[in-house]
Image 1 (cartoon, rainbow, N blue to C red):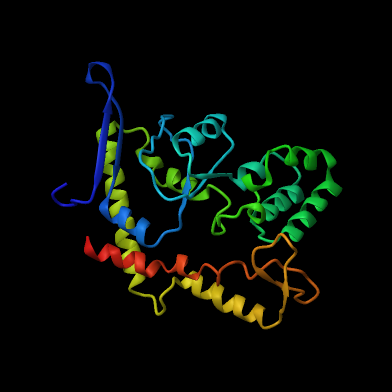
Image 2 (cartoon, helix red, strand yellow; image 1 turned 45 degrees about the vertical axis):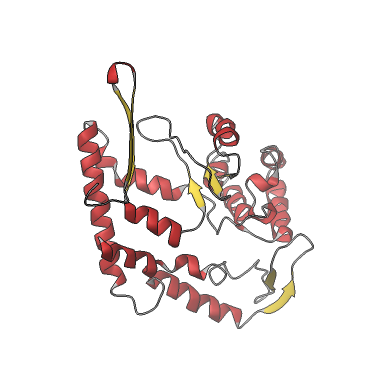
Length: 270
């Protein structure tokens, strides 16, 4: 703690002072989240099969998870101000048809209600049962971005958490103290690599984001601007080479959220 005074730790013990769980976060992670990252929290089951507790009241944010019953029941009790939405990857995984899986994920991503219903029609044509099952999931705002007033910033799956689980796969079978130490070393290595990568950037955004911006700018020159349907939230780009697209992949709209160079700059303090 003397090395990182902004770090937060909490150890929970049970009867007989027996260890149950340990929460910790590094100061740099807190600062980067508050300053740069999008207000989206992704939840997935941990490999220890334990319960994650979040304490405190914060501004309203998006909580993204699979449709596990315990999460659905727990969110309103623990995080009443959060907007709980479902992971499109887990939802699409319920269907065996490859085209239906694709349409489910496209339906979750689009911000255009007209395009959403077009995708749903495509699902109905392929399988009326799949369409009915999808409509029975619950309110559309629980999984379809076009019907959710609060932006989920293009994040429609829990892949971020799945990547983390894979990153620490080597630590899973170790004793608790070893797990904590190895994860710490793992995180430090990643922040070091992020910082070194940021020094190579020639723009305020990542190389990947810069390529997306250039590509979308080229696409935009071929577009005509039209207002979306009555339920839409943005003016959309329409009719590109005979095809209809909902928008410019949200990259330009969310440019500041991909400005990870600023997040990497935080790492220079460590």
